[in-house]
Length: 533
Ligand code: ADP
Image (cartoon, rainbow, N blue to C red; front, side):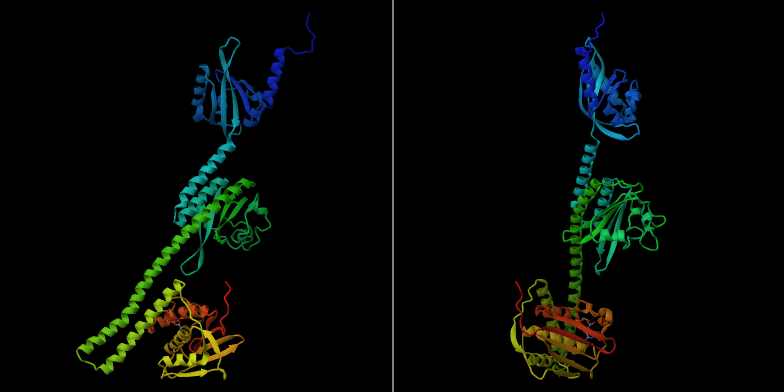
């Protein structure tokens, strides 16, 4: 009699349990015969590879194998025939849509009831994400190694652009980098990845549009699934959105590159023609690289600065030697004439004396400069009468050919200064006034008290200074080009004066009308103020 027992046999129970385990597994579990034909295909396999169980049973496993890896299957079957299991074999397989995925395979032989090997069962785990992370780490490490010792800014920019473009999965990437040249003017360098330069050139440099401002202002990362829908986008005439011929950017990612000191040194920009291509993971990866890049760029920039300073130093040495040589040559000339007794001592002595004074002046300036650079311009403050200070300075310049007018407050007052240094400033300003105006003209020195400050002004009726030079004449070695040919000087006097006045916690500046004359003012506290710290 047939059993109606609803209870399943032990065998059936085991089968059912096994089936449940296999179905609920997150790993793909597949079995095949020794001819590589698929005999079972679980739910996870459907999910991982995109084929249904129905589609796959009876198919050759080769469907999943990239053609250049077919030999792997021969190896697997041969291992199975020998009864040798395979553990954690990492390889690449194809999904139904043709996408490559990384998997880790563990395969064991299947035996029938007589112990004969009839097939194989395999467990496949998708390790694509893990592999991607490994590759990303490798990329970041390789780039880090490459840029850490690199001093060429362009090479760093290119490496960083290439690496970040790959890391972000962008179709194209660009690194825009702010640079300041030796004249202090800033301009932009850029490197590209994934797109030809022409494609960008049509676009021009990133202008100060709302979208770019976010990045160059260092406000933060901009990530958009569709930048064409961004309210900041397309606000600027004349393009209103994407300029014609420009790269088709829908997905957009922009990361500011900020130096240790907090200065925005550039921005990394990524684009993709499809929407929603960039994730927060991409954002984090690029941000990590951006901070590495900032360090490397800081270093490279320092190196460039050192090179520039070295060049300036060389320039200065040759310039200073030339300045020193001129009076020496003149002295030598007079000495030769004197030796031949062609001229009398009354004639040559004052001339030689003048050249020696010039040499003294140049050497004193050079010493001042070296002290300023070493931060050792020591000032010795003393209380002194302002009037005496002014009078003594006027007396020490030989200016009989000029009318020097001293216009002072009726009541003299005391100032706390380094007497020698303030005299040096006044004498320098008076010498310049004489040097840049014609004999017979008037030079006026005015001193007034403004609250707890004293202001001294020296006005001449000379050639004047064009407006665009007014600030720059206080820079080291700066001379107005028109005057540099006709008058002697190294362009150091005003720079040193500025340092001295600033050492007195004051300021110095000039006003001028070309052809009419110049007025130099300096102002500082009457009393020495306590400097905090
Ligand atoms: P130097 O006189 O040795 O060149 P300074 O630092 O004293 O150096 O002056 C810098 C430059 O500023 C001068 O070369 C000149 O071009 C300009 N300058 C200074 N004072 C006057 C002035 N009173 N009138 C016109 N130009 C002046």
